[in-house]
Amino acid sequence: MALHRLGPENAQISPEEAISGLGWADLAPPDRPYMALNMVSTADGKAAVQGRTVAISSKTDRAVFHNLRTQADAVMAGAGTVRSERYGPLLKTDELRAKRVREGLAPDPLAVIVSGRLDLPVDMPLLQDPSSRVVVLTHSHGELSGHRAQVEYLRADADPFDLRPLMRRLREDYGVRSILCEGGPTLNASLLPYGLVDELFLTISPMIAGGADALTIVAGVPLPELIELERLWAMEAGSELYLRYRIVQR
Ligand SMILES: NC(=O)c1ccc[n+]([C@@H]2O[C@H](COP(=O)([O-])OP(=O)(O)OC[C@H]3O[C@@H](n4cnc5c(N)ncnc54)[C@H](OP(=O)(O)O)[C@@H]3O)[C@@H](O)[C@H]2O)c1
Image (cartoon, rainbow, N blue to C red; front, side, top):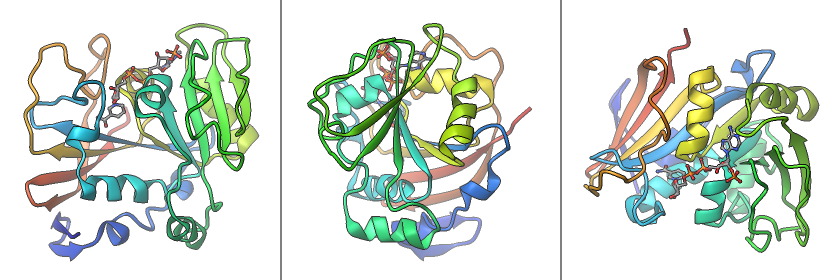
């Protein structure tokens, strides 16, 4: 499995090498974690096929996905994503765990789930894993039951809620300096317009899905202002493109 880096300089590189030493923790502003968003899209901009990403994500994309989890203190996803993708423990191998330690991070990332209604399937493997630490950001006053993971809650006072104060609390109370956000589109729409996302990793899958109602990487109403991106790198693997952008903060 090899990636061909087109820029900044031409190179053959493995996903393990490409996604290493990104140093996000050092880039964190004082009042929130540094945040990278990772998404995959078809050539016609669709973010899911029949409610899942599996059909548009290749073996190399999954390697990039799992290596990105070695770069951040926490990995975050919205309730819709954890429901449809049925999240398991975040790290699949001890090799990935060892890579995190080499990068100066805790062996396992903190899992962060954003859920307004706290309607989460407690039987999903992540919540049944006793060694997983999960923080749920929610509007609900309830608590999950029947899980074996270590679950804590950060509560918001409205639904949908403003994620800015909760990002500050993740930084101040949990020491989270960097977050990898794995979507989905609804959560992205609660992050991008508020200046909470610093980078976008976008895989362009060489497929066309069609469908006017199919999800794109950002749901909801049009953003109040266009968000400008600066390309940090571009890589290819076969017909697939891997783009890394910096979000230009205004
Ligand atoms: N292409 C990709 O890279 C990619 C990545 C991730 C997901 N997906 C796809 O996206 C689909 C899921 O989309 P989605 O938009 O439903 O997922 P989502 O963004 O993961 O989750 C949406 C849910 O998150 C909670 N939420 C997010 N922001 C909130 C806020 N500000 N306040 C309160 N609650 C908030 C709500 O939870 P409650 O419902 O609990 O209230 C909301 O229903 C799936 O088909 C998945 O496969 C694709």
